[in-house]
Length: 272
Ligand SMILES: Nc1nc2c(ncn2[C@@H]2O[C@H](COP(=O)(O)OP(=O)(O)O)[C@@H](O)[C@H]2O)c(=O)[nH]1
Ligand SMILES: [Mg+2]
Image (cartoon, rainbow, N blue to C red):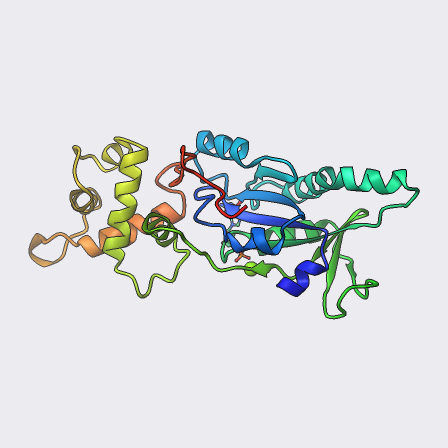
């Protein structure tokens, strides 16, 4: 990936709008330092729009542009990415023009942790113009480019990064959305952590969904059993199934438009 980054002018970093900090890899800022960065907050259709708006404001800065996208349902998502990439690179291109150089197409790479929507985005862009361009001068031969636009070439393979969390809460959020292998994790614990975080950020939301009073996370799982009739023999509550059902619905956005990370005083792009 480090090699590939040398071949690009800018990075398109994809993060999950529901967890913009947990779903990043701080190493990317080091690897791509100095390069322009377009941050796509993906899955915005499932995220809390108010939280997303604040994240956008928070993340936008010099050389960094952040936008929220619903990559799968928004037909113009590919077009928007191309447009924003061009806008971001315009100052550099203008300098070149001033020097009498005709700027070549921008070269960009989509980067991000697994499951944030890198392939979906590349496919959306490629659908518009799938002509592949190879053998660019000065660029490693093995790289394949998608000629996304007259002025934008995109690497056709994304740069996959692994999540790297700074604390237990980020780990809990990644686990809740299934972004770290949860075969090794106790689903009930993952669900209870997520319930706790949601209760904190969205008071009464789950209580209303599952018809219960203010309860602790374990009580919430029991309320889910009652509401969805998840029972074992002799009417014993099937808390494990409630945890699985809860996580499935959370991941599919069926519990409402929620974001498990909100901008806080201490939200920090630590490694930038
Ligand atoms: N609802 C929703 N789902 C998305 C969006 N972007 C990607 N997905 C889904 O997220 C999953 C992972 O996407 P994929 O492109 O394979 O992620 P990658 O691992 O980063 O390449 C797929 O099921 C996509 O359909 C989005 O904006 N909204
Ligand atoms: Mg992929």
